[in-house]
Amino acid sequence: MSIRWPRLLSPTNLSQIIRMQKNPLTALKIFSEAQFKYPNYRHNGPVYATMIGILGSSGRITEMKEVINQMKSDSCECKDSVFVTAIKTYARAGQLDEAVSLFKNLSQFNCVNWTQSFNTLVEIMVEESRLEDACRLFVEHCCGWEVSSRVRSLNFLMLALCQKSRSDIALHIFQEMDYQSCNPDRESYRILMRGLCEDRRLNEATHLLYSMFWRISQKGCAEDIVIYRTLLDALCDNGKVEEAVEMLGKILRKGLKAPKKFRLKLELSRYNYGEDTEGIKRLINEALVRGGNPSLASYSAMAIDLYNENKINEADAVLNEMQDRGFRPTSIVYGAKATALCRERKVVEAVEMIEKEMVWANCVPTVKVFSIVVKGLCHEKQSVLAFEFLKKMEKQVGCVADKETYGVLVDGLCCESRFLEASRVLQEMLIRSRLSCAETYSKVIRGLCSVGRQYDAVMWLEEMISQAILPEFTVWNSLVTSVCCNIANNEACTEVYNRLKSSPSV
Image 1 (cartoon, helix red, strand yellow):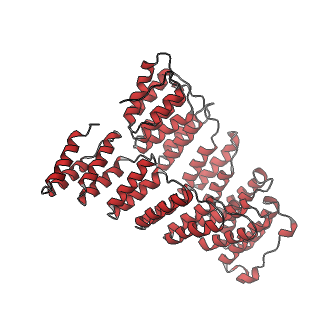
Image 2 (cartoon, rainbow, N blue to C red; image 1 turned 135 degrees about the vertical axis):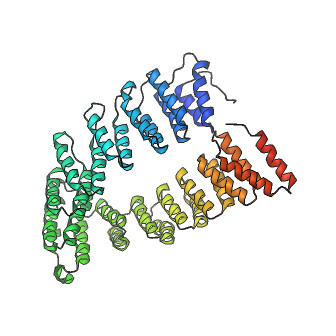
Image 3 (cartoon, one colour; image 1 turned 45 degrees about the vertical axis):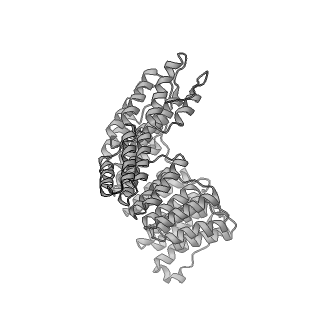
């Protein structure tokens, strides 16, 4: 290992040096040597955060734990985000109990705010269906001064309960928020309103709407229309059309603060006086968007909500009206549309949306939008098209895909036995400094061996080892089998053997 040490070392210098290392163990060695080479140097919080992030992203759990313990011994001031990284790493490795143990020992660190760690851990426990443990953790730590906000965690708990059709318990949690000096936000109302309506608890949902009028809708926020729409749709679906129309008037007047000229009476005769439920719901949606002062926020909120429900035609109508009124859709709206199209297996339309519709709307696609479409193409076994699409977008827009998108593309190409293309994508990942995981490398190596490309396979094996990634035994089996099957090619076999023999160990 040869690096150029500066005359004076600062924590910023060290962070830059270890980020440049491809091998996480090399970065750790430099990190450890720094204090011996510079007696007056001391690691600070950002350096520890960088090192923990590098080890966590490469799956080096043992080494990461040692650095965390060293940070505790040094008692240097650190931010909550460091522990968020560690908690997510433990969760990905299936060691959620280690994450819980780390959080419960945060008092031993020089960290004064645990809010992010607390919310992250509760969210992960809810996603892992450990609801009782999440509730226990919340009760034990929610009142501490280290947790400055509990709204996000309570929202996760309410969401989990609503998904289990226990909106009655979620409602009790919501009502307790007042007594805990914890003000519910818009997301709290959205989660609970949807849960109550799905459980057909329409009386409680109506009372929730009234409380919303005087708590978060006092100034008439356009984004609230998604919550209003949930209740109005539920009333229509349960045969209470007249009640829905009456409630719409109250929403326009008290919720959206709509001017009188916009509070028009709905013409129900066009929809068989309420018998055409879907028609009435469309009419109500139009009234909600136009009822308040039409804005980018109101149109965007309605379009995104409709796309999330796979009501693509209705959402497109909102999108067209939005543009006709002079509002420019954002990439978030197009991201929701791309997701809906991919769910409906309309991936070609999703590609056309980026190449034509977004160009016409003068909206620059983001990495997230690209990733959604690339994943959709791979899911539909059109990975070659996804590969070409990604290359074209990088040239035209200069938008570089993230590590996850590259990984999905490599997996998709391997599933279609396009191993040479997968190898090229992997090479592109290295050029873009998007280091892959062991599983992706293993798939490519096994695939290259299956098509007789032993030399390329060994090169990727060397790359794995240079990053301190230990190959699985199946990788070695594939290489040996491939060499034995092609034993007649003595020159190639000798080259492969020499490379394997000279490869450094992990």
